[in-house]
Structure formats: C-alpha cells, structure tokens
Image 1 (spheres, one colour):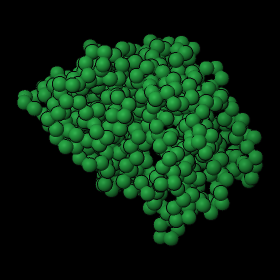
Image 2 (tube, rainbow, N blue to C red; image 1 turned 60 degrees about the vertical axis):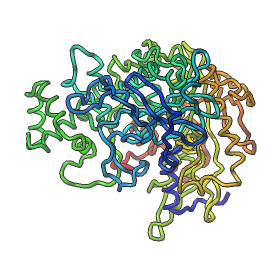
Image 3 (cartoon, rainbow, N blue to C red; image 1 turned 90 degrees about the vertical axis):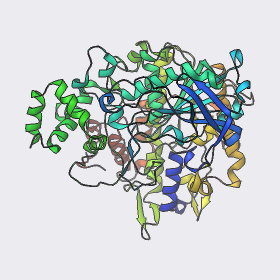
Image 4 (cartoon, helix red, strand yellow; image 1 turned 45 degrees about the vertical axis):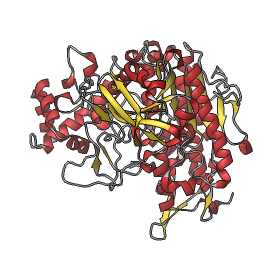
Length: 612
C-alpha cells in the first residue's frame, strides 16, 4: 500500500473513532416499544419492558442499588427501594456523571458535564418470551454481564445493544452503569468506616459491580436466566474491572466465567492513591485534590496552608466537607478547572484499581491470584487487538498533521507510525493478556487467549482506512455483539465489499463467546463450526480472529513478554533511521509501557521535559 493512503479527512476520522468507541451503540438505535409480553416481576416490583431489535426484549433502567448521593456518596451501595404498581422499563437511564468528549455518547461540546450521581441502573436484553413461556429450571439461559469501558470516567451500559447476541445464541445479556471518575474511585483515610472495611477501600465502582452481580443472581430467573451460569465480560477499562472482580475475594460465587477484552490494568497502592506526588503519590491523588478544593473553597490561601489545615481537620470534618461539594466541583479539581476556566476535552488522570487489601488484594499478579478471588477457579478468556494504539495515534499531533482548514489529517512518517503502533500495541497485550494469564494458569488451567486482527475497513476518498486504523482499540466490540449500527460511521467502516468477511469474523466471535457462557469453555464455538480453541498453556497459544483472506480464524503460538517487546524494538530495522527508536521508547515511557525514564537515559535517548 502506498504511503499516500494514510491521508484521511479529520472529520471522517473523528466520526469513526467516536462511533467505534461507543460501538454496539444504542445512540443510533430506534426506541423500544412497550410490550405486555415483556411483563416480569423482580424483588422490587413489576417491570414492563419492550420489543426491540433482533426479535429481542429489553428492560432499561432497572435500579440495582439506591442512588449514591448525599450521605451515600463514597459509601458501599445500599439496597434499592421497591415501587408500587408497574414500572415501565423502555427508557434508557441516566449515565453516571461524566464529561462530554471525543469518545462520549453526548452531543454536548467537549468538557461539558452530563449524567448524574443517581445512575446505578442496569439493562437486560433477552430473546422474546411470553410471560408464561419464560425458561425455568434446567432450561434457563446463561447470563452475560457486560461492563463498559471509557477509561473509568466515561461511558454507560445502555450504549451497548445486546439483542442480537441474546436472540441468536440463547443468552441473557445484562449491561450496567457504575460510578465513574472520583465518584467511583476515591481513597482517603478520612472516609474509612471502622464497622465496614469495604467503605474505606476507595473502590466504590467495584462495589457497585458486586452489588449489580448480587442483584442479577437474585432476580435474573424472572427473565429466564440461570443465576448459576453468569459470565462477566468487558472491554478496555471494563476489562480492567473484570480483572478486578476476578481478583477480589468479595466476588467469590458471583459469577462462573470471565472475558477480558483489551484491558490495560495498572493497580495503584494506597500510598499512590492518597499522598501528594512529592510524597510518592500518583497524579491527582486525593491528597492533592483535597488541597486544591480547600483553596478553591476559600478555606486556605496557599498549598502549604491547605496542607497544614488538612492536618488539623478531623476525619468527620474532611468527610463532611467533601460530601457537601457539588460532584462537578470535585471532578473539576481533577482537571484543574476550579478557577472558572473551561478546558476542552474530557480526559483526566486519577488512581483506579486501588490495592486496599480488602476489595482488591495487594502485591503482584501472582500474589493477587493467590488472595482467594475467583481467578484461581473460574474459566477466563483474555485478549486484545493487534493495532490497539492506532485509535490514539490517528489523532496524535506528534504523528499526524492537519491541513486544509483542519479538514484533513496526514501521517508525518508512515513507517514510524506503524512501528510505534506495532510495538506499543504488543506491550499493551503483554500487560492486559499475557501477564495476568500467566499468573492465573499457575492455579487455573482453564484460561484462553485471543488476538483480533480484522482490518478490512474500506478505502474512502482515496484513503485506506484499513491501513490507517487497522484492528484498533475497541474495534472488536461490534463483532462480539453482532451489532454494526454505528450511525455516521457505517459508510466509512462497513461496506458491501467487507460484509462477508465481517460477518464471518463476527459469527465466530459471537459463537465462541456464547459457548463460553453456555459450557465454561470456548471449544469450537456454540455452533461447532470453528477450530477448537486450546487453552493458553506455557507456550502462549491464542486464537486469532481474521477473515479467510488474511488467514482466517486460527490458533497460533505466540509467547510474548516485556523483554521480548523491548528486544523487538531494538532489532526492528525500520527504526534504524534517525531518532526513531528513541521516539518509540519515549512514547512508551509516556504511556507507561515498559520503558522508564532510567531506561531512556540508559538507551541514550533524551528525556522529554514536557509531554511528547
């Protein structure tokens, strides 16, 4: 392919990235139609759902916990209230509080708030059954609980449509919300509760997920689901959260299988989560955030004064102060927007997956697996996409340029672009697939790996999007759900030419995912039309998902670890030119992938004084 094929319209590219990131996206789906056939009774009362796509039923906005507002902010989720009469369940619930941005489902401008703290709801997709024909007993269907991604500060469960997966493969699909950003992850010693160790964990979003799974176990039979065959699955940050549940002793017995898609877990210690950076804390630790808020609210004038004041305040005073603030004010403290500024974008950094020793164990991967969570006993599938990083490189000013009134985007150095994506994506898979699976298989031989490689996006306006984006991060989601309604991106991502191969890959993935839910192993897929998916093993065996023209669905052996990634960079002939090797190392250091500042110095590469 020629290098000129890397040119692409910025507006076109942005539409594609947005739509894929919220793929399987309910944003472009028709509304559900209220149906008496979808009448079901749960512990809280009676629900009336609706008919939806793929000959499915859907129930939106079922509360699985009380709203975590007021005094319940940063508390373990409380039981939901019951309701009288029939509750209509065809309207999507509020998203959890978040900021609109490049990958959000909102039409608001980047940086604007939407959603609510009152957001602990789940949604259920099922094959259509009349009330008197809902499966019971041994005929009940396996349940697949989807945990959405979005860096743990964006996203919602209702943005994903599980109707096709449910109807064509006889499963119940549950999607859900969980607290996001600092509402979901906030460890501060002042919030500790002596009578409830979970409340002081900081992992409130994980507690939400535990509460949702308990609700599912107690109520899913009303929809024809089997509470003893629950599989959790999630992508990106959702994959991180699936991994957290696998490691949490609090999750024992709540699910019987787990699928991790494109995770990138980086657990944080209590020290990193709470202490200022200069004292060993992570960026935007709660210690730093409390300091900013004390100054912004007029309680102190300087950082030093705020630190001194914090030492004099009791836990009750700090807790009361933090809970009295508007949630938007707290989020603004993380993006350093407390002085009336309006920064664009929705991204900010904060500690997640906090190793508190109660909800999430401490130690390395092996120690966490030994801590007694489900990881040592339930079957696990984990995988990633060959070109994860291209989602981010595509709009990165270090690798691309804008021209023609910001209407076009071009790659500076296509070979460097590909090499950076290749090596940093491999590092991503080591962190999210190979390292966790190697730790698990010491105690659990029922673990499986995969790699997604579909890259047959069409050529649009002379631009080969398959080469530009490839098998990027999140691109596997429509294939897993079998739902390709991406709105404006449809004509850019999907075409008559790639329909046959796209459906081939999607049918295979849906079949394997469903068989895993039905039978606790992927096998040959539920339809028994595909190769036997062998366990990961000591040689790193994995299933590759691609079209027949590019090798098809097949098993490969590809052992990979951090040392191999660095060896591949060092020996890559493409990177012999100029400072390209150092540029790849620098990018990976910034992205926290294997390379450290000490490594840059050792390798003779400049240490950037500012972000690359």
